[in-house]
Every structure is written in structure tokens, then in C-alpha cells.
Amino acid sequence: MSQPFRRIAFAGTRGVPANYGGFETAVDEISRRFVVAGFACDVFCRLSHSGEPRKEHQGRRLIYVKGADRAWLETFASAFQTGWYLLRHRREYDHIFWFNNANFPGILLTMLSGIPLTVNTDGMEWRRKKWPWPFKAYYLIASWVLSRIAPRLVSDSFVIQKYYEETFRRKTLMIPYGIPPPVKVGLDEQVGILRKYGLQAGQYFLQITRFEPDNLPLEVAAGFVESGLAERGYRYLAVGFRSDSPYASACSDLAGQEEGVRVLPAIYDPEVLFTLRTNCFAYVHGNSVGGTNPALLEAMATCPRILAVNVPFSHEVLAGAGWYFTEDEIAAAFRQIAGQPDQRQAYLQRVRWYDWDTVANAYIQIVDGKIPSYAGD
Image: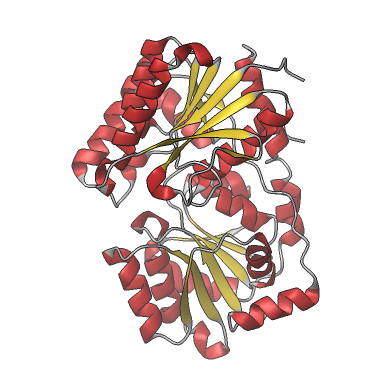
């Protein structure tokens, strides 16, 4: 166990409790284990993505920054506000973990403060379809500069690690994400949950994601419609609708037009999510940009089949145990997987390597001045 009374900060995400995406989940899981190991932990949160502000959550002190009223400025503004806070309170902290290179101004202020820091790079944000070119340029330039000046960088996949080494000539530490602890839901409860959502076990495809172009829910839904599987009794369920962006609205409109397509808001109840994953025919993973994706890991821990977008990140995590699709052949991929066997045991064997205890211990090793080598059993 690490020596107590060292204070660690986790910055750059929307905060905890985790109710947005992979970074929030990672900070939640890692910081809770830091607390158990005897560290004092602060997690920076954005007021715009929080419910009622609270002083602490499961042993971690929560510090809120305002962010910005305009969504396109929020990350930049919250990063600066967090960095300014850390600069003014620099004597209180022993190490700062920043998540996402987009928080560039806050990371620079932290470097000025002299606090030891580590940056989790995130994926390749400049490749995301949703960003206009000025944002793509910002992400790319920030990533290049940080690859030159940041003392330590973490990649969450071997693909990202290789990219940084070959493109930016910078070595990074590879520390992936983990899978959540298993959830127990009785059969009667599962039947009730499926009935609530009008679903039949083994008769629906599931995608849990943010409704953004890079995650392809609209394209996947259209491919499902084209596949004709709805005529055989299958359904496609997309979970994660949060805002009325033009892209998300198009997904909702398609669901209103096609009987076999359903769209639901984001769900965070672990028992509901477990039930939806366990009883689906197949999980569809469309996240085309990024590293190790927590949603894919969670699917591997519970789902019988996985149909993933054909990108290197999917292949790294699935290690040959999934089926793949390209954007122009989604319907054919749906038809192909419809006759495939259950792969649950292969997924469970593979996903054991992604362990939150081992992940958190790797981050603790960084604080202790060691070079971690991820070695999940």
C-alpha cells in the first residue's frame, strides 16, 4: 500500500459520478482505488454536467469549475479554470492526472505550477467527423506540443501508443481501461426489464453509445433496416440519446419511421444495462476513433456476439473473437452475424486482461516514480 496523505488530482473530465463517457468511467474507477490505497483524491467536475453539487463522493473531494455557456468553448474554459485553480493551490498536490489533450491550457498552467503531472492522451480527436477543421487543428497541434513537453504521457491502447511513437516520435505508457464488477440480476427481474422496453431475449441488436457521427448509430440503424432482419423478428435498439443535435435528431426520426428501430435516452442503471447486454442477440460497436473503449469491454463481459466497426482499435480489443463491418457494408454484416454462434466464453477469456485493479495500480506506480508495465492476468 502506498504511503497515505499524498493528495492526487484527476482533471480534464466532466467529473464523478460518471455519467457521460469512457474518461469519466476511468477517473471514477481509478480514483476510488486510489482512496482505498490511502491517497487523498480530488476530482475536478464541470457544473454544466453535474446534478446538485456535492462536497465529496465515495471518499473523493469534488471541486467544481464553471466551464462556459457555449458548448464549443466548454472544454477550453474548464481546462483553464482547473489549471488556474491548481496553480493557486500548487502546494496542496503531489501529482495531477490530466485526461485528454484538448485540456491543453490547463495542462500548461499545471506545468507552470511545478506539480508532477501525467497526461492521458485520449484517442485521435482530430479525426472525429463531428469537429470542424479549426477544432481538428487545435487537437492535433495540442497533441504534438504535449508530445514534446509533457513529462509523462499515457496511451490507453497499443494502437495509440504506436501512433505516438511513429508520428510524434514520443514514447508513451500503455495503460488501458478495465471492466466493471459483475452485476447480478435475477431472471424474473430481467424478464420485467425486457418487458418494460418491449424486447424479447435474443431478438434484438444493441448499441450503447453517444449519438455522434464517429460512433455511427445512424449508419448502423440504416444498415439494419436495409438488412431485412426486422422482417425476421429482430429489432435494433440504440441507447444514448442525449441532445437534439442534427445527427441525433436524424437517428430519432429514423426510429419513428421504421418499426424495427428504437432509440432510448442514456441509461446508467447497471441492472438495466446488464440485462440489455446479456439478452441481446448481438452488440454493435461503432466507435471508429479512439483507443480502448469501455463500452466495448463491457459488451465483451456480457454479450453473446459483437459486431464491431472494422478499425484497428476494435481488432486490438476483440483479438479475433468478433465480426466486423465497414460503413458501406453494414447491411451485409448484419445478415452475416445473424447465423453465427455464441462467443461469450471467448470474450470472457479475453476481457479478463482488462482489469481496473491492475489499471489503478499502474497509475499508482507512476505516482511512486516507477515505470508501470501493464500486466493484467
